[in-house]
Length: 183
Image (cartoon, rainbow, N blue to C red; front, side):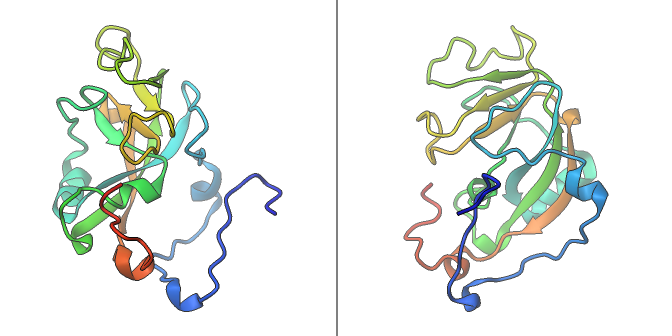
């Protein structure tokens, strides 16, 4: 039982564990930004750690020039992120695991609008007509194919890259996954 209300995993066979990065833990990178669990509603004007899955080539471009928001998507224009790293390691779809990167970012969410159903009246107008900075889709509401949470940040200047993480081969790390790219 985990008393701190955090997730815990137990891996019986240590050969199934692969270290993908060693980071020096400092007070600065440990507690400066909130690590909010994916099911918890983000609060206005807070800074949170999130993740963005992309290709190696685009990751380098983002490091050099910053994020370029998509023109349209489920939540309209913006940069799509998630607090759930298990979700973003599968993106982009249809490229080899070896070409994937995860960007660990800090995000000043500004004003947050919860979009919790398809055809929500503000699903694509939360920023342009209502002045919100971030739209958040909670996990389990049936809007995201993986059923995991998703965030859309309108202004890429609210996002700062903290680290570039190499995605491990999902089939080696998680051999029990049937089709990891399906979610």
